[in-house]
Amino acid sequence: MKKFKFEILKKDKFARLGRIITHRGDIDTPTFMPVGTQATVKACTIGDIKKTGSQIILSNTYHLMIRPGVERVRDAGGLHEFMNCDLPILTDSGGFQVMSLSKINKIDKEKGAIFNSHVDGKKFYLSPEESIRIQLGLNSDIVMIMDECPKKTNDYEIINKSTNLSLHWAERSKKAFGHNPHKALFGIIQGGLFKDLRLKSLEGLLKIGFDGYALGGLAVGETQDEMFNVLDDIKEYMPEKKPHYLMGVGTPTDILGAVKRGVDMFDCVLPTRSGRTGLAFTWNGRVNIKNNKYQNDNSPLDPNCKILNLNKYSKNYLNHLFNTNEILGSMLLTLHNINFYQELMKAIRLNIKNDTFDEFYNKYMDKL
Image (cartoon, rainbow, N blue to C red; front, side, top):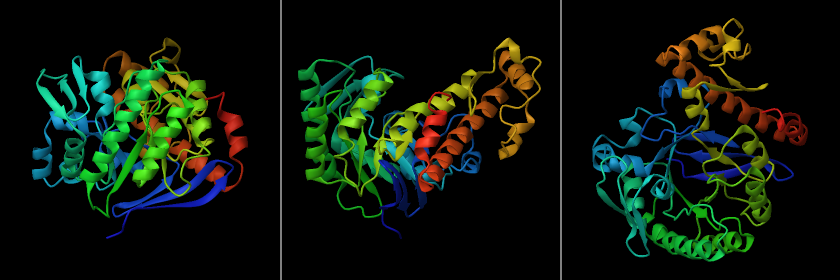
């Protein structure tokens, strides 16, 4: 059985072409992970997801601990067997959802996050040890440490306190993870928009030692320029031989800008959520398929798309599906968007390989 490994194949300035090796399969980087929050990528089968070229998906600890519960998934043989997925799976720790979804939550240094379920109000305790226990029970391939993900604020003391807490929890997460050579444990760099706190967080995580390093606490309301500034502040300090993961990001231009600054891994609900609401991503920009101007447009969203004959469906027809609330519209547009994101990642990798990433970046940064 293969051990987790990361290798860099080529660099174009800070942009990196690489490969993550797992016992479930290799992952070409930069990579985009479709989000399967509740053990499903909404409106898609795993077979269809694989046909887009997706090599890894993300699932969510917070949601799965609430429904159906880790015991039920574990007893089914683990998350891969439960959802019929033979791709590698990354599970996030649940910290972001505690912040964003729970109407009532409390953070305790030793007990972790104490919160009420957004489903039925039931009280839960999510400590670093419990988050790791759940993720190991789910049998995910890449496990994320438990961190606190604070809301965006310019209050230095709030972010400093949160950064210190996340480092304390990182140590406990590493200890709880134990020895699992065929899995990976990623640390999460916090620190808000403050360079010194980001570097303090990274330094602390490097001392503990992880298989990969994620940037958390972004995609929480900051501007794209603010996010890029954080990446610029830290890019020269990130460990060269470990994968860099920007959590919860993002738009196609977010991805382009982050790859330019050394990021290898991405996830975001945007392509699937947009697909369910009628927004398509294309090489010529975004298309709101519900717009009346598409009622007589019999051209496809992408005439060059060959996956599952998506290019056989016209904008006219897709407009009709959405305006009549037919579920097929959501299915087709979601798959189209995931396929576009994977085409984008493939093009990014090719241009890094060919030393033309800057030209590709300049061509599409204002277009997508």
